Image (cartoon, rainbow, N blue to C red; front, top):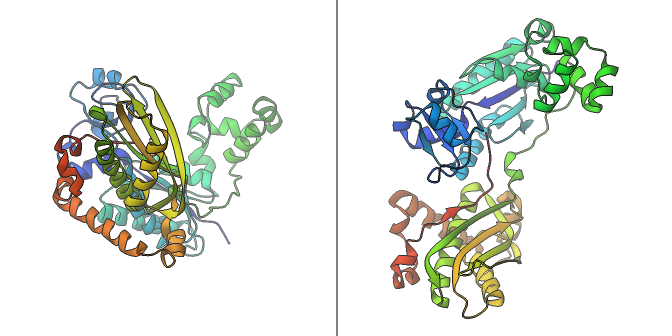
Length: 409
């Protein structure tokens, strides 16, 4: 059976998601960037309007602003990107079981069981693109080929919102004329080594003696020669990008140094509510809580505690965090900043169900958390607050920074 592989790439993913949330920035030069207020960090993603000014991913913000003075920059919303990524993945999984993530915005699909040839494969790819655009409102580009390497390369040939096909009979005409760096895993260092051998195209790489490439680049040289010649039998394995998230956290620098235990409780509850909400949104649970505290003298400590079971309920996170604080904080030392992080996170699909019947009121606490999330999402975070927050309005409104797993694109 001939293999038919699709590689789907969500175009300008971070920027596209931000455009969904803020329609007024869709048609102007816009980029997702690091610390926008401090003008530090780099460009994580840009839309097509910013690209026309020469703005590039991974360049410093100040450099991008010089090229495009009217550039609008927005901070990344990692949770939103993950949620949208999971919605798109469900579309992929409606076509086949073999879906392999390659980052948060790219996936391979093995549709060999439902596509007899490349023509049918292209039709399925077009249908997938149309569904992503209609249901998620984000453009995608697809490459269709007989292996993962050329499917990935095909998705880069036409953007945005296009399908490219590279067959086992015409790949030399399509691929060999392209720059060598178009090939997967040819980075700057490898490109420089290839240029030393006067290799600038994939075709030149394919026609080079593989022993020479192996001598210069080691095992990687032989693998690149095989890839250039269409030799790639690596399977599409069912893997989800969500499994690469290792932690979810939030932190804050308090508006004033905290000396009262009641004030620390307010901040910790607020932080744990945020972490709990984000875990639910991402479909994750955790079994370890980490606390980071910095005092007014900028001295800090970090402690973590194992939970009795995988969970994401706010009260469980808070109990662990406050216990860590009480056992490690030196009484009388003013607290300047606090961070709470959920560690050893995992999908809740099986582990949460495994314990849900054995832990009293776990389902009720989960439902209560979900209800609170829905109310806050619809009416704002201030629409539902804990009673203890009413005792200190200033702390209740403290800015809380998202410290989840960061992705670059």
